[in-house]
Each structure stands twice: as structure tokens, then as C-alpha cells.
Amino acid sequence: MTETVLITGGAGFIASHCAVLLLRQGYQVRALDNLDVQIHGVERRPPAYLDKRVELIIGDIRSPRVVKRALVGADVVIHLAARVGVGQSMYQVADYTDVNSRGTAVLLEAMVERAKRRPFSRLVVASSMSVYGEGLYRTAAGTLAPSVERTPQRLKAGLWEPTDASGNLLEPLPTPETKPVSMGSVYALSKYDQERLCLLVGRAYNIPTVALRFFNVYGPHQALSNPYSGVLAIFAARLLNNRAPLIFEDGEQRRDFVYVGDVAEACRLALRCDAAIGRVFNIGSGRSVTINQVARLLADTLGVAIEPEISGECRMGDIRHCFPDISRACSVLDYCPRTTLEEGIGKLVEWLDGRVAVDRVGEALTALASRGLTV
Ligand code: UD1
Image (tube, rainbow, N blue to C red; front, side, top):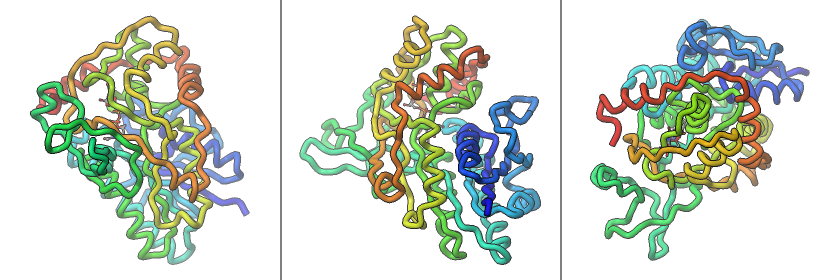
């Protein structure tokens, strides 16, 4: 029998890739999305990249009536709906909390009600690497340092690398799911809310739930004109407008960029794998790179000779290094990231061809600086 999947945030970048993959697997796909202006533009039209076979319901995740309707006949749910700007979350506190946390609560109440008549076989919730704050580190003496934070004083002095209490530099290590969480932004806190709410309510009401902590996801369909989206989309928007990418700090901070197709595959696996129920998984590529490296790779692949500009600025709440240990996802989910950064950036660049991006980075930095949210 054909299974129906409801994807919340279903007109978004990650959702569009999940939809194609799941359609190919024989699922019927329904999307619930409010076509947020920041992502979809003032016209709020359904995006051209969304597969025509997807049944799109336009509405808000916070509306019990809309969510109830979206759940009719659904067997599984992938919950991706969220506001996603880290910096913006620090001044639109009520809205981020409302959409992400309360929106998830509304979804869960509706699922619990519906499950009385017909159970769900899975709920997959998109959590985030942001719940870790700084990643895991090791001291020079070889002990693990799981609760590192950078002080504003050091950041103001341009001392970007975190140190131990005696001022010795720390070595960043792959972060496992067992590292204690440490939320540094309203966005991060709301993603943790989403993750915990889904696991807790799922467990109480027998809705088999899996949480995926996505690292830095990139690829085609990423919102180019949203200055709060991921760094690769932001750099692409700058380069398409013949402007230099602005690199914060010194560009030596490390991240794991995971291709969106691999993230969609992780979602598919989470729908199927019973051993994953009730657990959280890091979803990354398994390789870390610096922001300088990724800026150069993007410019080279685009074939533009614009040097990135090191701004020496730092956004409040930004972390220095965080990249995942993905061994749990590999062994339990059978997750195996297939797209290398070079291939993935190649696909991003192909998609960028002929596209127009409005570069709003200056606007976003001014918005943050005027609120004292940059260092
Ligand atoms: C954050 C969140 C992550 C979320 C992602 C996209 C944390 C720890 N993680 O990741 O969950 O999915 O945002 O919303 O909060 N950078 C520049 N120039 C720019 C933009 C960014 O140098 O114009 C740098 C940042 O300082 C950072 C790195 O690039 O060091 C990555 O930034 P970004 O893509 O915003 O993602 P994260 O902060 O890693």
C-alpha cells in the first residue's frame, strides 16, 4: 500500500530533496508550508523547484485547523518547519519561539489526536548541530573538554580560538551525540525544544520518533537572498553580485558541510529503521573544512577571481568549531554520505547558473550590529 508522508516546511530547501527521493521510493508526498516571505519572496509563490507531484497545503504550523487537515491520511511525518536564522533569532525572540517551539507543540497535539484513530509509523524531526554550542575539544594534557565557551573579552581582542582555564589552546574533535548540549542562541534553544518535544511526546503516545541533528546543509534550492541562511548560500549571493564574500573571524573556524541529497537520504533511512526510534543522530558528511577553504572552493568552482575579505568581525553566539562524529548514524541508520564537498559544490554551482540573488548581507550585519549582536 502506498504510504503518505507529510513534510512540514515542505516547500523548503531540504524538503524539496526529501520529496523527490520519497516520490521515487513510491511514497505520496504532501507538504505543509506557509511560504515565508524571507525564503519565498514577497510574492509567496510555490517554488518552481518543488516537484509537481507534491500536494502543497499552504498554511501555518501554528494553526491546529490547518495541521489537522494536513495530517489526514498521513502515515509518517517529517517535521522540517522552522524559522532558521541564528542571528535573527536573537532579536525576533518571540517569533522564533512561537513558530519553532509552539508550532511543534501544535503539530504534536494534532498527531496525538489523530493517532487515536489511526497510528503513525514514524515522526522524524529536524534538530540541529546548534544544540551543541561549541563542539567537543581536547586539552593539551589529553583530557576531553565538552563544555567550552568563548568569552566576549577574548573575542573583542580577536582571540578566536577557545582555550582551557590556564589559557592553553584546545584541539577540536569530532562531536558525538553524547556531548552535553549548550544552546548559544534562541534558534538553538528552539531546535532543542523541537527535538525534545517530539521525542518526549512520541514516547508517551507511542509515536515512533527519530531526531536528526543536521550539520551545515548546503545544495541547490538553498534560499540565496536570505542573509540568515547558511554561509555557502550567503557567499554565493555575494559572488553572483560581484562582491567579495565576507569572512568572519579569521576564516579558520571549522564546519562539516553536508550535501542536501545526503540529508534527504538520512530522513528516508530514519523512516525505515526501527533501531533508530527514540534516538538522536548527527547527520554530516564526516569531513570538516575551514570557512576559508569552502570560500575558495566555491569561488574556484564558480570561476570568479574575487578574493574573500576577512572582516575580523564576529557574530554574537557564533561558535568556533563544530563538526560531527557520524558513527552512530552510520552504524544504526546505515547512513553513508555519498557526495563529496567538491561534487556537492559542483551541483550547487550548476544550479546557480543564471540565478539572481539579492545580496542582503550588509543589511543583516547592520541589523545585528545595531542591537549589539556583533563583536
Ligand atoms: C548555524 C547553526 C546551524 C544552522 C545554520 C544555518 C549554530 C552553532 N549553528 O550554523 O544549526 O543550521 O546556522 O542557519 O548556531 N560566516 C562567514 N561569513 C558569512 C556568514 C557566515 O564567515 O557571511 C561564518 C560564520 O561566522 C561561521 C560559519 O561561516 O563561522 C558558518 O556560518 P553559518 O552558515 O551561519 O552556520 P553556523 O553558524 O555554523
